[in-house]
Amino acid sequence: MDFATLKAGRPWTGIVGCPGRYVLKNAKSELTLAELLGGPVPVSEHRSPLARDVVLVARLADGGVISYRRPDGGCLHTLNTAEGMARKLAQLGIASA
Image 1: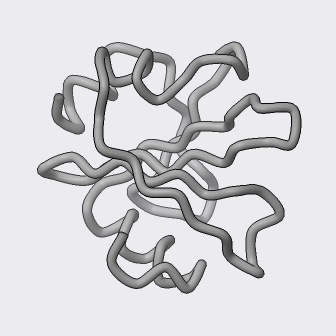
Image 2: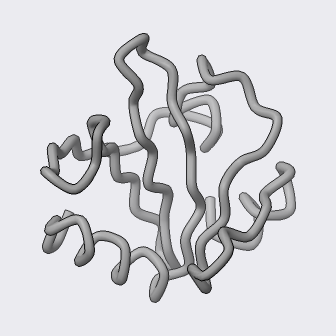
């Protein structure tokens, strides 16, 4: 899976003021990263004082997905270019997930 394929396969909307970052629209919050990416993927889990939810990170060769796992177990998924992902992870204090 790569950025372009993932972006073309779902309704992603650009996040205002965040170049290279997109949020998945109209998705059921129960959608897992494995379902989103089409199979099991390595995912790292992080806590950041700057995020209210657990942060899940799945890397792609040219970017990746940062998901926020809500207390009810559902997720909000964001698709990121390599630059957008690096910027957001740095902002969250997650150096090299």
